[in-house]
Length: 408
Image (cartoon, rainbow, N blue to C red; front, side, top):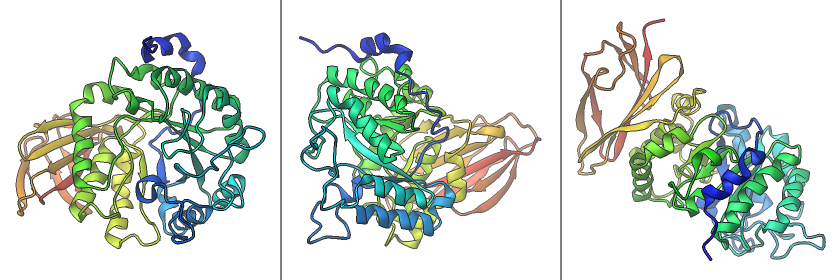
């Protein structure tokens, strides 16, 4: 028997399942454990890096004390492998007692006292991807109520050990259950990633009515190739993806791996620039206790963050892709724009790029535009529509421009 198509079931469920929580009017920002820490449960030999309350308290401390919170990085998100292997006698999920001896409620209280928010992980399936208890259709309500009672602020719901029909019923059901708790809990759905990320398997109109954000594509790994793969997939499918995103409902190209091991300094700027242009959630997965000054500088770049957080909420699009260069543009509020010039070549020398506003279709203000280099923190000048903007882009690097009209 064929599973019921996602589109059909969502059409039946319709707006009754709308999350309607008013959250995440701009892309969410914070820290998430998975890419850096995975399912490390060895607290005996690796106490500082295992999935435990100690790790999440430590990251909350860093977010609060090292300038991250003031810039908008407010979520501390638990991922897989936090639970016991069995539910408790009442059928509720429970944290591993050795690694979370104080419980999730106490951890949430600690995080909230820092002015931050706590996110947690579940899976719409028999088991999580790491083999821990999942959320089945008959436990959706009790899990939603449990998370609300603990003071959780966000749920990421994965989709391992499941099938299409279970996901199609379960993801909307969890949306309604979270809404019914009365607690504002942001909802991150991994559903599209398990359906190939594209129509007809994925109906983004309906998805936007039940989730605040969703994973479209596979897990990002700590490598430049993976960053490029994600960027290219979003570019190839932007006609579908770009209209789906907006205030309260975002496409999620996955975590920021800046500050880990796989990206150079230039490549790290590429990820930050493109995630800003894509209006992507900014969830770091790194060690904030030992992050380098250069990585921190990129992640805390205020103009890049302001581009990402622009309240108009329009996702950027790829305007050009050739052998060496890509040009991405995002329309911002107040007549402003962000444009990223990406050099994918890595043959060892910076390459020049000549641009002008007319060719970028930035022509509304005929008096010209002020142009800023975001990562160099420099003002390049005021340019008319036909003036040449001379750029030099480093190998596997990017120049991100913020462009604002002279007209008032």
